[in-house]
Image (cartoon, rainbow, N blue to C red; front, side, top):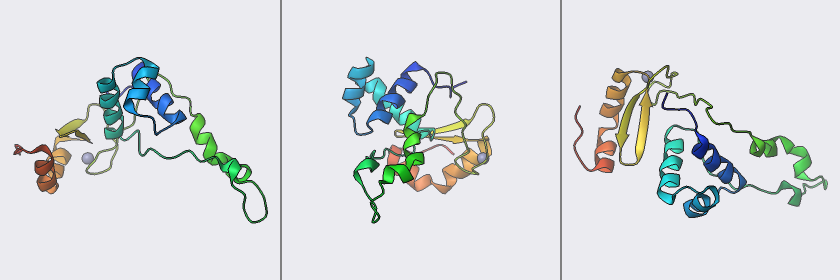
Length: 146
Ligand SMILES: [Zn+2]
């Protein structure tokens, strides 16, 4: 199965959950994996939709609302997000980039430039390619076979 997390993936995710603004080089030094590997793994985690965005972690304890209540009391749920335990071999659920349905088993994959898109079936892949032909061609800089 191509979409199980391995130790490198979880190390990268844990490192970025601490501070999402770390450079790839910093992460690479921390987890003792080369910078290009960190970059490639990071991009893959973005491509499969696991990393949705890198967001600032706000210390809500520093903010008070009008009544003087600290926001971290109110928003403690939001903070809990940063305590997710990631485990090796976790299986990532993919949804089809064309029909948005779940992908069971082996996905059809379309790669262009640094991007990968995943589809539930070859026809979704073909339809996606047709729909986004211009963008895909300009990003990959070459003609795609239909
Ligand atoms: Zn589909």
